[in-house]
Length: 138
Image (cartoon, rainbow, N blue to C red; front, side, top):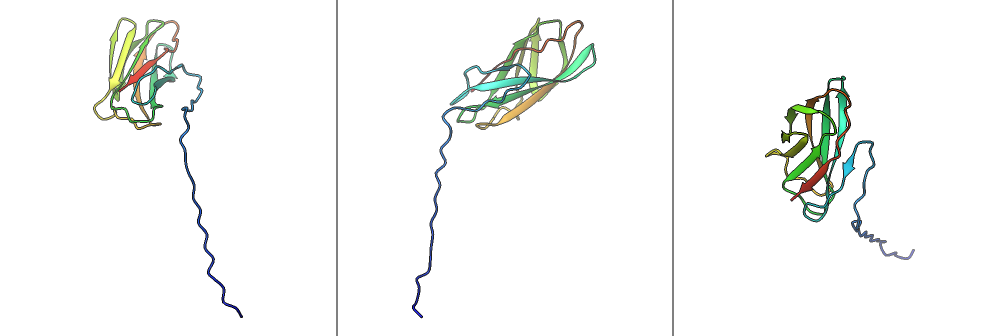
């Protein structure tokens, strides 16, 4: 019998990030303004429950950039007479039909590709048209 050398194998892999962020299409309005460090911040609205004179909604804020953001802001203008009566996970202010939401002290930082959400309850009469959101981060 002849001696044999032990067999060995080496494998390596290189992971390269995509140069363009992927986007998810949803039936809710989505905006993609520039903002944030290294990329865009987007926000989507989802109507969670509607009972004819009021509703609850959730807004998801996403960091599509390559670096973390440390604060975010989402704005929109209602198309009807919607009025926010309660909110959570954000500071929400209204002036006429305009609404501004900013992060709470505990959810301003969003990692690249990460998300956070905030929600609200509102009243309305007539049509409840979903808002078109504008988002930014830094």
